[in-house]
Image 1 (tube, rainbow, N blue to C red):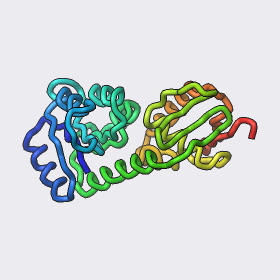
Image 2: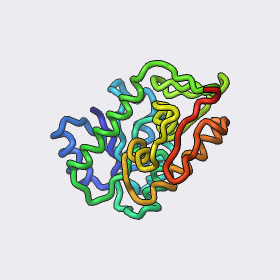
Image 3: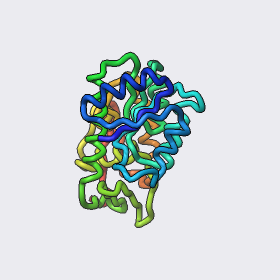
Length: 228
């Protein structure tokens, strides 16, 4: 598996790269945001695509949050933020920008490795599921991560798509808020519930089918197929 490590401290990058290499991961080191974005441009080399980006937030040329936002405009590659910013607000901000996970320094390298493999596994699994699911006027295709409403394509973020895909697995079944956060964000951090509410509101607005996602007060959410 190939990783892009975005880290301005060469000593930290060298030590982490050595650990990851011992576990069979191939690491490319980018020292700043511009180098990272350039590495993710299509056609930069003939190697396999990056499976995960490990993104430090304290970069010399631009803030890591800004880099994450730019990555999301050009690539669906999973991003794990690795930073000393441990407060809940910073975590929520990173997840809202499209990060797939958030690891706080100092960390145990075994946990980091587990998170890398978990993110890569989820991405591969969702990308390989065949078929299109019909949800009334909504069509969802996991293989291409495409969604359309009445035949018109709808652009969703990675987390919005993952959220819709999870609810679509079992229409009519109530998913608890904690369960959704665990499945989509792979975390149980206190305060992440607000992130879920923001994504639900954004998803409803983009889909434009008011009855598709129903709030079950005090519990969570369920998907209701129109006309079913």
